[in-house]
Amino acid sequence: MKKRILIIFTLFVFALINSSCDSWLDVTPQAQVNAEKLFSKPKGFENALYGIYTSMTDASSYGTHMTFGLMDVLAQYYDVYQDKYHLLYEASRYNYKNSNSQDVIKNLWLKNYNSIANCNVLLDYLSEKSPSFFESEEYKFLLAETKALRAYLHFDLLRAFAPSWKENSEALCLPYADNFTDRVHGQKKTSEIVQLILTDLDSARMMLSTVDPAREESFKEMYNHYVTEIGNDFTTARAYRMNYWAITGLMARVYHYMGDERAYTYAQEVIQAGKDGFFPFTEENAVSAPLKSRDVVMQNEILFALNYAGIHDLWYSYDASKNNYYTINDVASIYSYSDDFRKEYLVITNSNGYDISVKYADVDSENGGKIPMIRLSEMYLIAAESGFDAHKEVAIGLLEELRKNRGIAGDISTTITYDNFVKELTKEARREFIGEGQLFYWYKRLGLPVDQGSTTIMLEPSQFCLPLPATEVEFGGRKEDYLNNK
Image (cartoon, rainbow, N blue to C red; front, side):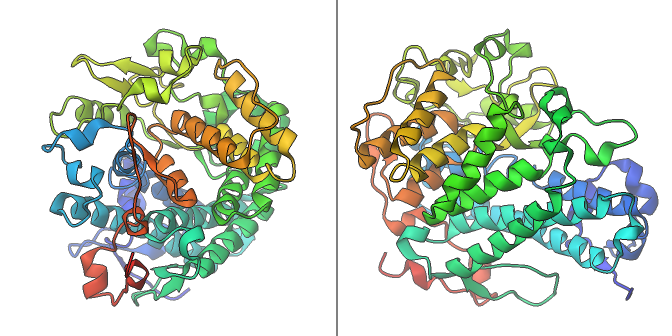
């Protein structure tokens, strides 16, 4: 293997791995990392992968702004638009030229591409190892999860920065960084990026199809979703990782973004797994428990979550802040059904009298400390919308089933039109995705007005696109021609 010394910027996430790794991290006075030493043992590869997951919990990424922060502000979940002193006030009004907005967007871009770079470093070193270097099927887990993470990160960057597929699937927009290099990756068309994402996911899914413990009967016991088995830690706690079901769900999400009927097939595979006991719907008594033991994220249904014990402290710091809080805007308009138990138990009034989500509240470790990334309910929404034309009765039944499992009684008319059905799905998405950063992408994909409670906001296509950081345009030669005349 040729010698590589990689600067700390590239391997930043490896510094986030716990201190037990210090023995094989060789940091020079010039802040360089000896990657040869890191990848000299299988354990180094494992810790490198853990480090990528950890990097994704950064506040610039899914720890805040790719979930309950910027992306949910853009979805108008909060009353930020009424407070000119809030750090995201201008962002809530889609003023991306504001300095606060630009800083958040720039850091989001850099952190996610930094995580992608580390995926590529790991894949680069994996390519030089034989599967026999690792125990059992560990090579497949490393390769599949890293590819799937690279796809996940690229897809969210695509959804955030590029025009929607419906608006312009041939827009020359973002780079797809599929190798580690010191050269600038050129921009690719949306259609090209999506194909590369699906190629990564197809490959990852196939590798895990025969080895992932998440497909075994034992995974039906919720205890095995998040608990690390001593002596076999790398192949356990699969719900914290890009497991087979998470990859299948992500493929449903990508095809749904494209308006491709294959979204229905992949979503239904996950739905069937849920019915088979792998991801049972969360019972009301689990979310009606006292707050300290409440299942605030409805963990049974999560296909993939990031493990971040510090999310409570971070969330509390925002809640206690006068210029960075996230007060839910018009709770009654979101949860309009009186029998919907999400309104009763997943939203609380804080000490300042504001309504806030409890998804990141301080609860017992087995119920909290998770950032939901893909959940079962999304598969119901995807399958219902994607299957409406060909499987209308099934589609209606899926939405009714989802609502029933949230305490909402009542049938949906079999004569409902597609447009009205999408409106009902959108209302349900608004209830489900609070705090998870998914709703803005839903509005954007369909070109729908953004719901602000008492009113709606019709965005221009350009307002649905985060602008590229100025440095990418000025020094990276990036172009944003897709924003012209929008």
